[in-house]
Length: 288
Image (cartoon, rainbow, N blue to C red; front, side, top):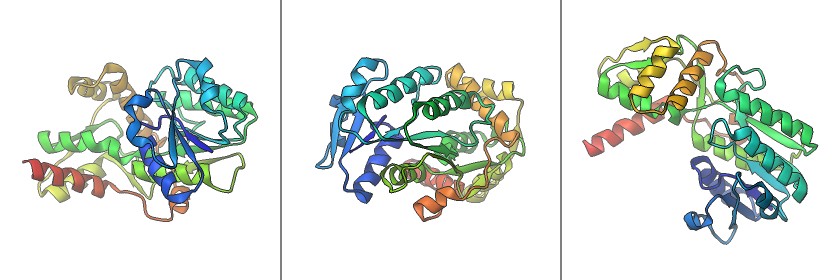
């Protein structure tokens, strides 16, 4: 049996869809509140309560599970303890293979978002459980707010300078995770999953300008100033600082990788910025 943590999240739901299409193995969707995720259940997918903050309850939810997809938690600052609880529960339950969604270029990352991934990769290494680490590049969907703000205010702002960021779609990463956790190769390994396209701040502005039919410039800010713009737009301070720090890392090349492993796993091109911009423009026209 395959179990998926965070199964009710955006990535987790997509993983379940792909698993339903590519494997006959039963799947257990691990969620914090099963009553809020009943639509995930099917003849192949069952639900189990799985609360990171209740470690003693976790081994029971993994009973009978041979393969686990550990989707990194969303609560930055709490993830090391949460991931440790999951790994310990997997050991107690006899899980024989773990797949983990990490971040591109870990363990050399200096990003704030990379620190907890570095610790989790270390814990997996020390666990003795065979595992595959999927070092995911940046989701192109992360730029949805950037595109919308540029269309509204007439400029693309960020702090990544001329740095290139490797991107792919959330569904691309979901399919890769589903194929790895259900595949025949159960060896310990780390895969750098960079998308087919790498973009800079100027590339984003150019693509929006091309599709919108008007010139939209890019403006590179200092990291602190960009964090201020994001908090001014309504983002919590911690998230704003993490995003600005990611741009700082991108400027230094930390979010770029030339690996073609992702394309190879899913056997198709990955999602591009042009796809995202087209989707957003189409939606704005439909509601305008």
